[in-house]
Amino acid sequence: MIELLCIDVDGTLSDGKLHYTLNTDSPEIFKSFNVKDGLGLVYWHKIGKKSAIITGRSNPIVERRAKELNIDFIFMGIKDKGQCVRNLKEKLHLNTESCAAIGDDMNDILMFKEVGISFAPLDCANGIKNIVTINLTKEGGNGAIREAIEYILKKEDLYEEFLKCWQ
Image 1: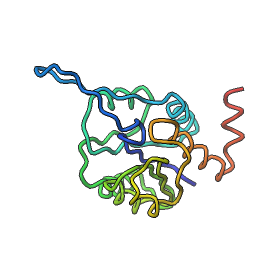
Image 2: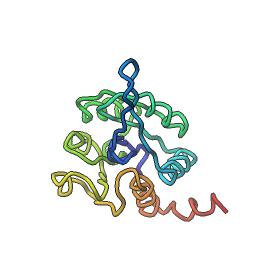
Image 3: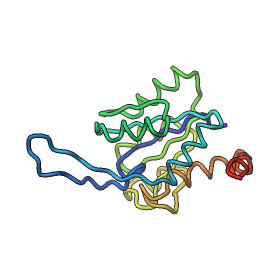
């Protein structure tokens, strides 16, 4: 059973676009997040599963969104995502097969090597398509995380429980 979902941000939880302000004194970066991904993560946590954001960039917007969704762990500015996942598995006493990851680019490869099942959004980098377990039909920031969660729930016979939760 998958107990931990590790999530990249740019190109996965968001669409990968960075919108900058011109204010040089205090420049801001804007990101967009999909509510379907968010609702999927809310349910993921509701059934006792854990999640971790593991991203190469640091941004307070990501931290805010993670807190809104009750994401258990937030790791920003990470260069070696594989080591980050190894440390988290050790801390949580999880094995590789009980972890999943979703990412879209080359810096996610080390993370993929530390999990039992890996996912990539439809618009991932070409070099990722043959590395991941599952290539998703949704683009990053447009429901890819929700699709991955639903895939896991169906595989583990938890999808009907997910549907009942909203009735």
